[in-house]
Length: 96
Image (cartoon, rainbow, N blue to C red; front, side, top):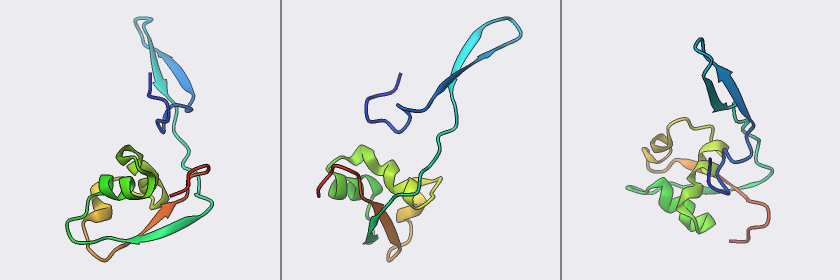
């Protein structure tokens, strides 16, 4: 259902059965782990989170790792204020 490497790929699936008996699969809540280590990044004017993710992970779709490390529910909030410091979690097995 989710792409390999997706933050939801390893989250357990449950099934809700509605009043008509239809089974509706859904994902359980994803637990956000504390990253074991991180680097920091200072946001520049006009910078985008996908480009920051590409810089550190060589994959713009990994922006969610930065969101998790900074406990952000709205990704755009992380880059809204130039000068803000962001925690950039290290990913096991990846060498920047």
